[in-house]
Amino acid sequence: MSSKFIPVILAGGKGERFWPLSRLQYPKQFLCLDRTGKSLLQNTALRLLSLAGGWENIIVITSELLAEGVKQQLPELPVNNILVEPEGKDTAPAVTWASIYVNNQYGEEAVIGFFPADHYIGNQTEFEKIIQTGVNFAQENEAIVTLGIKPDYPSTGYGYIEQGETSQENNSPIYRVTRFTEKPDRDTAEEFIATGKYSWNSGMFIFKTQVVLKELNKYAPQILQPLKEKGKQAYGSLEKISIDYALMEKTSLAYIIPADFDWDDLGDWNALERLLSEEDSNVVIGNHINLDTHNSIIYNNQDDEVIMTIGLEDVVVVRQGNATLVVNKHKTQDIKKALKLLQQKQNSQNFL
Image (cartoon, rainbow, N blue to C red; front, side):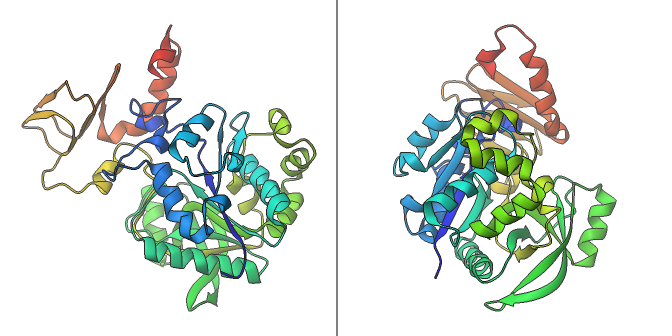
């Protein structure tokens, strides 16, 4: 690559829908969910290492609660490359602060990429090819490039991006973004897929620092200016807002590259069925005795304990430390609601 490419890993999330394995101080991105022996954060960093040209060019932005864990998980990462947010305000402040930092450290011609720490990507070669295409396009054009995932089923859990007119970069099609759409109902999702013009919103972005800072100044000055003036001390006054709402849905410089590598955002326990193919109808990790249980996910990381299930179907059972989760597979989105109930109990911090 002709330009300096600086990947920024977004690693401040809580991963609540993977409770009880995911806890406040040991969230989803610190977990190994795919039997590689490496956590999601570690796999994300290793995936970007060659593209970045070394650990010194990778940045992680995370929370105060998780900063020490990031250091332990990524010992090769320079400590100064860990940006620690004083509080979580969603992705717009995180992207803005990291963009200011990269601009100051590497200059306005540097190209930044933002990557969530909790994604699964299966084809490294195709991933690197797509990222290089995006970096080259962002270097040569006033563009904010986002990676879209070609949908293979009508998901109602992802946002969608509509493709407009096309350009080319290294024989790869790049489209202007026509619009972003939040999570649709199933009928709408099926209509989107039928047109062939929609991709899932992956939450991965690539752009030059000077381009994104100019656009943020235009569309989100209430976030940019306090961070430029006060740095992280400005966080208390910032609104909680995603980069999609703050910038991507407003800018006229948005482009999309449809990506066709294996991808999953690992949003909740059901992702294990997509991630871990099994001959049995169940996905099982750890000690489990099964009698007439089907289409279920059993996760037990207690070596000296066993989970026994009898006559169950479409359930998730997770045993971890001092907590056990039993939930219908179709209700995993409600784990966050249940955790709010748990927070209301005395001494709940022991379980969060």
